[in-house]
Length: 121
Image (cartoon, one colour):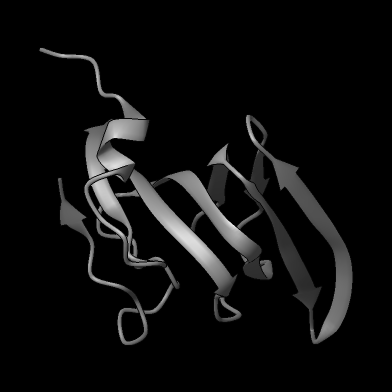
């Protein structure tokens, strides 16, 4: 039983938008990911989407029925939970490092066809 250092885990890989599972609890996966640029628009119909910024800055653009909703801006140490069913797109103008929490087996795009493969590190 050792503590997990998120910064050390983030040093192990360089690929953007490729979540890495670092732990789990109560049927949830805890992941780290490096992001830069725009991710695709997506939603999670059955689950909220948790974002915590470990390093850098990002924004989460959201829309409902193609109408834009207020954008949420996050800096280091801040988190935001996108409510289930809300279509959103994470964006980072410069590289940012995040911690994500999702139910085990939940595709990161809400759709297995477009989801990134999660690997445990």
